[in-house]
Length: 507
Image: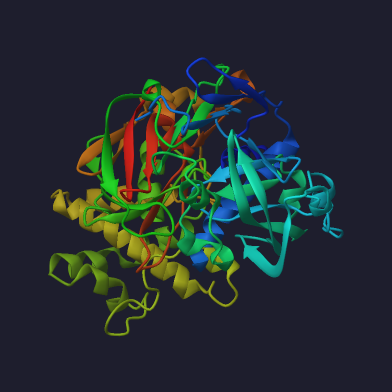
């Protein structure tokens, strides 16, 4: 297990938020919000874990024109990991720092009626009695994250984002924040930009009301995230269009394949020029501004870790499969047995005649944390299923048996640790390969400088892989989450009107 400093570094690098603190109006007619940086501290590192927990938990459970209808929120780069944004609720306005999150759909902030959570006393709280546009709702609700939850009740009031005032928006007043990470968080709440299909209580999201109330001329919003830590401007969130200054060339658009999250279909994932093979038949991917890293199937993340020299710790079971069952697995695969049947044939997985009882490769961490599911056979089954993918891919390359299992054994050593983090030697960044996502038939390349996150300088520098493991069972998975690491490299357009997502090289 890594030392505590590595855990803090990973926690810090696994959150994304958006921060704007002061308004400014420019001659181009666009409203911009000036921002300031926060100093790094351990509280911030710990609090950032909240957003990663939200991402994992929710998946397991369920053209800029010149008119005034374009609204811009400027973003601040906080060591490539945190970006906060200020909105206001009520009349007169009460300001709150929120995360602009394409991976959820509700707006919530702490309530003045939150009496028993320390987090509420450390953040701004909405006071209904001070707003003359407040309308009582009172229906109770809760949102469950990877660990902990928030609960409260619905209320209705005007919400201002930049210069746009959304009238009669239903939101959640949180009266209980059940996680210590909320205590340490720099943000007050979350503003979801996902689809209504995943909105708790089927509440109409803020973005929907912007469109319905005619506040934007185009049903589009876009993100430009500036990954240059030294830059004064951390990026922009634009409602109603896109800013051509923020991208190069043309966008590649792909359809939204499933409303709820901003989900698309992606193809093969390459390490250098080497196909990992796992997504050749297609994988789902969610574009999520609420996750700073890139989350993907453990099978592929392990291959990435091996290629870049990252260190993981959950390798014993994988090595056990290779050492004890290598010959049998090889014989079954080379004699034509269907790959999905091999692990059940050798007794490591159950098979019910239609599909694996494990229903795909589940996250090892989930197996350990969910009561009753963390038995040895489940873990060995998972290790076997991953090994089959790797072995099958190597067989297609006509590798010898000895070379195949030597390579697979090395992959076992690169399995991610329980929290998904993997550290690398900062001196090796220049030697690492590019990686490529295939989206819409086009290759979207990330360089090592883009997918490795560095904290500190000199001897105290820590470099963390921008990839974490997240296994979502079929039929929802396999699934990738394209977070800030990807969105920082590619300007992203969320086109609600045409139900599509566009990517272009960020300027």
